[in-house]
Image 1 (cartoon, rainbow, N blue to C red):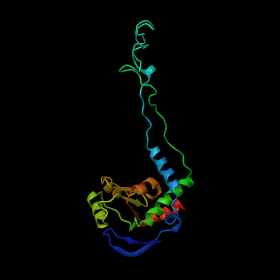
Image 2 (tube, rainbow, N blue to C red):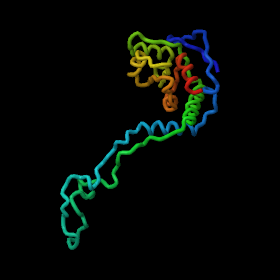
Image 3 (cartoon, rainbow, N blue to C red):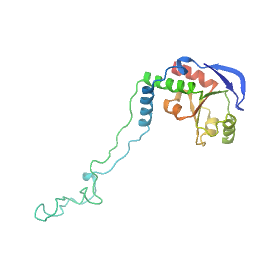
Image 4 (cartoon, helix red, strand yellow):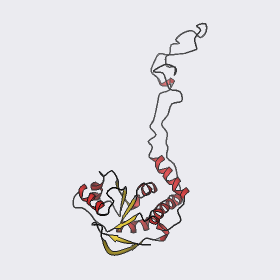
Length: 208
């Protein structure tokens, strides 16, 4: 699959790049994509939630009244969950939400997501560029030239471009990542995928 290479002014450079069919032209596997997105979202959870149960509440353990003969229910101490300030019944405890996914399934999911974007014409190849200093306005001008300033975009670079990353991190609809850090969720979450020329070679090395 051949795609035109654009410059930062949004104009065609007259060059094209070949997107390999074994990465950008596979039959999308929806179940693999589902598993990969599910794993990513689960791994983002901290799992630090905690509430105190009855035995953990700081309070008197004196029995409030005798067991029988009062006409009321049995209450035990002041830490009873029935009272305001008492413990919580079966409250949440810290736990690990992370999930495991086989490498081959994750690779298939990423290829499926890339192939889906390529099939929809939602991939743009941009010539490699950099900034001398971080400048959000300059990054906005590139997106505007590509007519993507109102769309959710993901720029994929070959390596960590510090100035480019700092220029785009404040834009709410723009994201920047390295080719080796590309994951299924980020691909699907963007309306348009912007690949730098160098990133395509990194993707070939990573996903081959």
